[in-house]
Amino acid sequence: MNESPDWKIPSSSPSPWRDWLLAMLVSAVAALAIVAIFAVRGAPSGHDFQFHGAMWLEVANQWRQGILFPRWAEWANWGFGEPRFIFYPPLSWMLGAALGLVAGWKFAAGSLVVAAQTLAGVSMFVLARRTLARRAALFAAFAYAANPYTLLVVYLRSDFAEELAAAIFPLLLLTLSDLAEAGESRAAARGCESGKRCRAAYVLRRIFFSPASTIRNTTYSTGSPPQPPRA
Image (cartoon, rainbow, N blue to C red):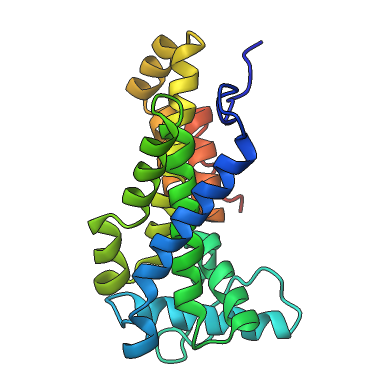
């Protein structure tokens, strides 16, 4: 039986919990530096901001009605609606709606960016700490939390789902590294050639997937084609 991935700080560190706290602090500082301008100019309205903001308001409204997992976006397409929540990855719109209700809608976008980039920095610290010293790993965490592409996503694109996906991407690389160390590199290579494990990585990249993509990828991975409806 293969061992589960070990995401702990190396035991050679004199204080692992101190390392975790330092990583969180450094990542949070980087995240706050990104959103500092929000206090002066407000949240940037990127390409997808209206799309995400509308979803957050829709989800919050349906939560008030007792619908815990929305499926139909009533006010999309000028009131015609669409099954948006079935297809779009749920973590971004659930987190955005929750932050909007707790922190207020004025601070929802900034709070999500801070949460995502803090997670991104900590994830990179865990990955970098495998091979780097503590200071170098902390620098890697800060650099990843405030990397230029993140600035592009936050200020220009407002693609919060992709931002959350990038936040856990170092953990995906760490898992692949653990699989290779466990002697499964050949199996992983064969799986990627067949498309199954690459598809699983794509699902993870899409941030905990959507219900529709879950059914689709599970069907394709098992090799069973979807059955037509019976008359």
